Structures are given as C-alpha cells and as structure tokens.
Image 1 (cartoon, rainbow, N blue to C red):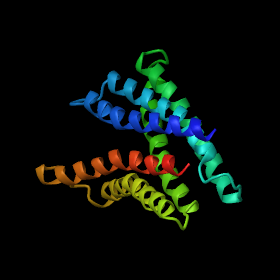
Image 2 (image 1 turned 60 degrees about the vertical axis):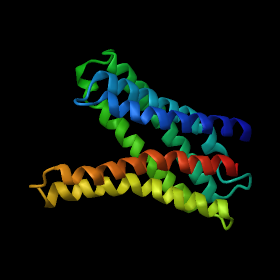
Image 3 (image 1 turned 45 degrees about the vertical axis):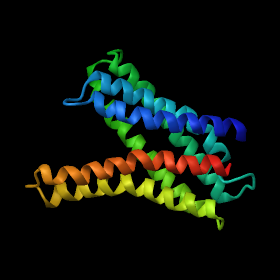
Image 4 (image 1 turned 180 degrees about the horizontal axis):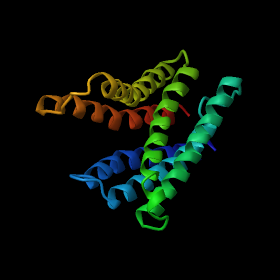
Length: 195
C-alpha cells in the first residue's frame, strides 16, 4: 500500500502544480464553465490520488490520533471526489441551473477543508525527526495559507466595508496565491518521501 501511496502522491503533486494555474487561467477575466470543469476535474483527481496517502500517513504504528487523521483525511478525499464529480457534471449542464450555482462554492469549501486537514494532520502527527519537523512546518504553512485569507476576508467584510482592491493590493494577493500553490506540493513531497 505504501508503494501505491507514493505513486498516487506524485500524481497529486503534478496534478495540483499544473491544474491549479489552469483553473485560474480559465476564469480570467470572468468565471466560465471551463473554469468549473477544470476545478471539478482537479478536485476529483486530488481526492482519488490523496486517498491512498491518507490511509498510510503517519507510519505503520496505529494510535487514536493516527486513526482520526486517517479517517478525517479519507472523508475529505471522498468529499473532494463527490464535489469534483458534481462540478464536472454541472459544468456540462447535466444538473440544471438550480444546482449549478451551488456546486462551485461547495468545491471551494472542500478544497479549503483539504488545506485545514493538512494543517491538523501535520500538528497531530508531528515527529521528532527532521522529516517529521518538515512535515509539521510545511503543513502549518499550507493550512495557514488558506485559513488566514478566509478569516481576513470575513473580517474585512464586516469591519472594512469601504475596502477597494487597488494596484497596491495586487502584490500581497499574488504572494498569498503563490504560497497556496506551492505549499501543497511541498508538504506532499515531504510526506511521500517519509512513507
């Protein structure tokens, strides 16, 4: 199972590294069905390829923390597969207009849940070795890279209603996006090496 997890982990790294920019570029300048199609395919591929990794993460010794991390990771993978499949179907117009408006938001929430799970798994499975500490710090970076902008946008919605995106705010947004794009492959690379 470890060999399968390593192979699918590498596929997940490549899929995210190539797929995330494709999703973003397909939505420029306006969201489109192509963007939703790519996002759905990326979510489904991530769910399928990360499921074996979640089954073996943390090593062969079982404990309550590892069982929780593995089961919650498997739940996130199932949610990724389901939301990705629904988004792919809705992008093709097969689910009707009422569902089509709700599915992209659901997929985004599940992708945020993936990054939060990475942070929680990294905290729960922190090890004393150098690679264990690397997994911990990269997992915290991945979890924070998604959680902090979500919290900041909620706070700005309620407390800074007059905020306007200008040329001065483009650089911080770009840096946050780059951290999100690179943190998942970096964390997953260290996890695959440690398996």
